[in-house]
Image 1 (spheres, rainbow, N blue to C red):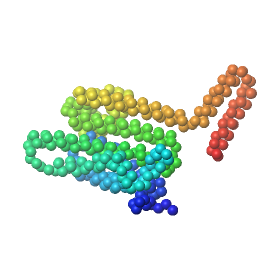
Image 2 (cartoon, rainbow, N blue to C red):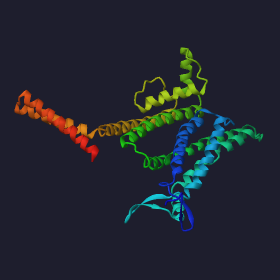
Image 3 (cartoon, rainbow, N blue to C red):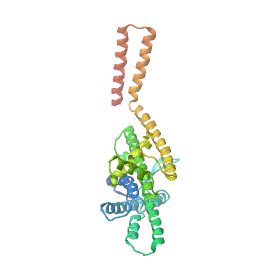
Image 4 (cartoon, one colour):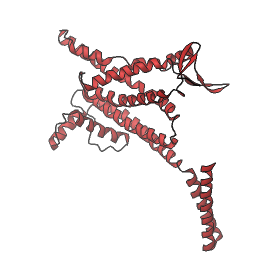
Length: 335
């Protein structure tokens, strides 16, 4: 009988194949990774100060859960590829700890640095350093704000979690790949919008946002004071960049913006090309039997035309191949 904890050399090991709660834990960690991938760059790009609010409390709760996950990884059996035995599960505690320390431990620790608490402490302190000290402190604060993006390194674990979770459920490969491609496209657009927000916050005016803001005020659309309005404008430009549309209503205003947007256009073009190419490949493989049947019918029609067969015989041949393909498909389900 397999137990929740497999005892190996006197220590405890969690085997994710047979421990029921591991699936729910992986699902929760996956949801938290999605939240981090969306919220962290958004906060860095569109919020200038760290406040003790709902998002701050949720962030600290997520950090606590990831700390628990780090502890669990030292006891979680992992799969490796052995040259002689193939894929095997390692259940030795020393091997598990060594593997985790060499792979994901540094990434997880960097992602758990309490940057928000440090920023909150700096904002609440009054050191009286004068104008020069305030400028140096502002540079340090901006550096710390950028360090919050290190939390995005946790997203790299998503492939491992997705692979381990899909092993437990029956999901078509094509469906999983299409969902991953859509998520990649949406995430790339969101991150590029946040990059535009970071540029808006750190580049002196006139910049892309100040010019666009004045244009919209002149047109009577409003001053774009809310964070939501600013994000929508940035997302609009990011989607145009990723999909290579480029309406031209948002234009860079300085060298920094030209350089940043050039890189974004290159990355966006590569992302769009990869997504479209991969999606076409996945969709074409969704119905292999249907594609093979259509090719057979095309060859049959070419044969009928070349041999000039009678209409009656042509109809009998088409019905025969349709019936044969249907029986072969049903036989494939039962074998």
